[in-house]
Image (tube, rainbow, N blue to C red; front, side, top):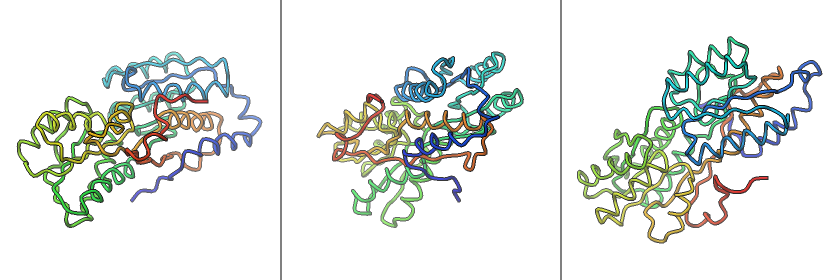
Length: 318
């Protein structure tokens, strides 16, 4: 059962309003330095998260020192980065964990050093606060689109990703929807596309070789879904419905193409997500009571019908 609180994108405003009620003693603690570790700095998703953190942090203190580093999806590298932040004595570590289980000892070292740890996008055991997309809802929405498009009957497959809380939750949400519909036949749900376009392409090639009557595929993130689309087109399969999760820039382009097989993506807003994580982490840093230490942001399903109104990852922000 999920007990996490769902929140709409307006939660950032609510967090900002409550900041004015802080006790005077807590307000005396100035935010001076922040360390940010993300999966891959070259990914537009993480570029947007860093911008969200920077903008919200400079509203608190225009002179705050912010250090952003890329873990390159390497656990050992991220652990070293956290240890460096501890040695530096930062006030808050903003963490996008590359392994949502094995990162726990490093998180605990940071907490023992008196540093606030705010997780975003992916949960991290022991983090003081966490802000993520409601990834179960994202999987549900992307796969409900498939069910509706197939009128409740057809052969479907799921392309999984690496084991992280976000990808696992999307898988669970999708499975929940598919299993509720008797006419949906899940032909494959155990293939790992590695979270990457090439991996999605490789898995999709295997699926199309094994199942010539495949009707639809859910990729647990957009890179895998886009890779699946490429494989389907190369094999002349233009009748397959593909959905994903992210609302990535390349997905926006694909959805605007009338020949796209990628029909929908449950979008995330990395800018808002990470900005909210910083605000919530700052409240914890200031000694405020946190009613909900984990906040889930509701995803929005992006299709060809509404993509022109979608404010994507690279959109200008105020």
